[in-house]
Image (cartoon, rainbow, N blue to C red):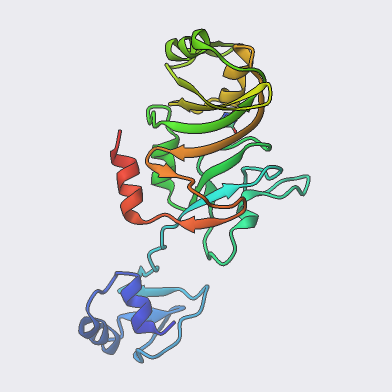
Amino acid sequence: MRLDKYLKVSRIIKRRTVANEACDAGRVSVNGRPVTEMGTKVRPGDAVTVDGAPAEPEKRKYYILLNKPAGVLSSVKDDRGRECVVDLIKGINARLYPVGRLDYDTTGLLLLTNDGDFMQKVTHPSFEIWKTYRAVVKGVPDESDVKKFAEGVLLDDGKTLPAVLDVTGYQGNNAIAEVCIREGRNRQVRRMLEKIGHPVIRLMRIGFGSLELGDMKEGQWRHVSPEEIRRLTEER
Ligand code: URA
């Protein structure tokens, strides 16, 4: 990248004329040597300073919505060499991390980002955003099961917050249900459904706050716009 562009994206000197003056005055250094030519190329790993202060380009923030396939880990890397969600996102020059997790066998909406503040905010227990799942379950839950969800289900790690269970269809003797929860405990939906006697056969996350999976195919991903991120973080 040219030095003038580098200084601009690092936001250390916003105006080109000021950058030129700083350069002319020998205030800009690359790898410890003053540089007066704005067309000088800055390469990855070069140390650029202005008046001795490091100039680093502001990192672009990425927010990615992935339809996670089954059989892929919600992590960055695996000691046993299994495929991880970050392996599915090609062409992004940033260290991405999954926002929370989906089980190995769960499919659907998973966010990935390199924005640490955003990550902390949405994974904090106090950020009780609604997450929506479509589950195929054994048998057919009835009104008393719906009530149990609405009151919170007692699990090994305590009673859950009130949740929503809605039977939306049937597959032979089994049901298709939508489940909404506001927490993110380990295997929570599977444990809640197991507890009421309707274990999960298949599980897919279809909503995360205002974000929807829509008709994305497994393995597909898209960028989430800053407007969608704003709505997500402000909607509670
Ligand atoms: N609840 C589960 O049981 N599994 C998931 O992957 C997500 C929520």
